[in-house]
Length: 345
Ligand SMILES: Nc1ncnc2c1ncn2[C@@H]1O[C@H](COP(=O)(O)OP(=O)(O)O)[C@@H](O)[C@H]1O
Ligand SMILES: [Mg+2]
Image 1 (cartoon, protein in one colour):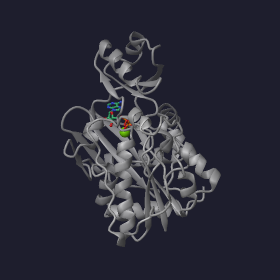
Image 2 (tube, rainbow, N blue to C red):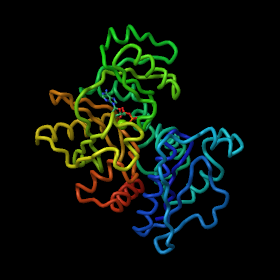
Image 3 (spheres, rainbow, N blue to C red):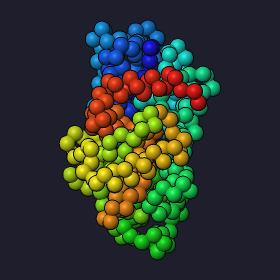
Image 4 (cartoon, protein in one colour):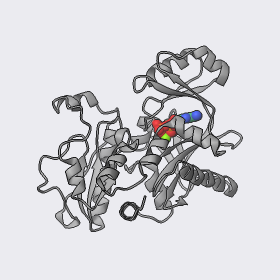
């Protein structure tokens, strides 16, 4: 297949996306596909020499730096261009058999690109625009979880600048977690143990978005469960060495310990996998996803969120879960590509 791997873009997860995209592109070349890695925002100058196959010796790579990318600088280097879809990207996608979605965050994960592709008849991997939209909006996703009996921590929505910390702590108690409604990679997420901490956390999250979630903090263990082709993968436990699973602990090698399969009883394993599948279905997700959970100190599960385009970086969870199920990284990418090619929705 002629596959265009789409990555980059102008979201805060740009760097992570370029890392995922590079590895996916290399894996797809190794599986015999003809592959191009394209940055959604930068676009393409010329379609010449865009695609490479396994025999070309081409290897993509991109390292995730410790801090988030400087999006203002990237824009400035491109003449301040506001358009998020760069030159010739749609044309190149139309000229490919399939677009492999390695975009995290922003228009790549919230359903907007998926809707554009549907309009143009472009085939792509992962979830369709409805699932992407529902999962990306953490408030909508949690409302759907609640409606379906899927346990999730209590939360309130606030608008940055108009949040009343005192009434939030009166209603929800402490400690709390504050997060932007539609971000990922823990960007803008922080914890609060008291009222001053809550105000600081709200101010941090409001750098990214005006709609914020204030959620009860669950103290306990953290897990994630991938879904591939309608089946839950082995559960993975995440143990950051310091603090919670923030941006640095997600992408700096060795910052967190991941244990897969997680050391859990058969009952708890089945429970998490069951909730993961139910969440995947309730949010109308596609060929794969990854659902995040906490287990509190009484082993009660709480679903945090669903990821429609989970990371494929060297430290990412889904590839590790797939490996524990005997699926190599190359096979995982190849299967995701094939499911994208044959999707009917
Ligand atoms: N309610 C919560 N209780 C405890 N920790 C949380 C809670 N919500 C989020 N976290 C921590 O913050 C991280 C990021 O939150 P998450 O909701 O998964 O958003 P993101 O889309 O940024 O991954 C989680 O991996 C977890 O470590
Ligand atoms: Mg998460």
